[in-house]
Amino acid sequence: MTGEVRNNEAEHRYELEVEGQLAIAVYRLRDGQIVFTHTEVPDALEGRGIGSKLIEAALDDARARGLKVVPACPFVKHYMDEHPEVQDLLA
Image 1 (cartoon, rainbow, N blue to C red):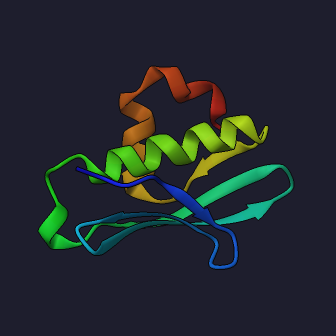
Image 2 (cartoon, helix red, strand yellow):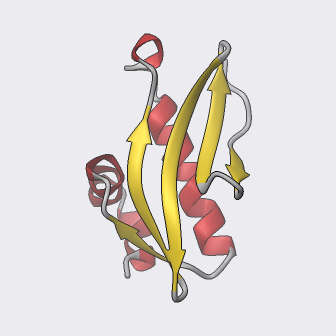
């Protein structure tokens, strides 16, 4: 169904390619924090959990890197509000 989420550090975004289309979560790093600023899932992929898979992997990576999360993007904020297991990542 979906590929693997990758961190494209050169573009400052996590990426997930599905059916030749790219879902992204844009971020910037600052002082031990990762600030998610924008999440975009192509219209053709909406409603299939692609955005959630993307953010779940991005948050797992943030945890592994010891980063706190600033959810400036409404989608990331909503995801974190709905998943208590990631609340400890909040900056």
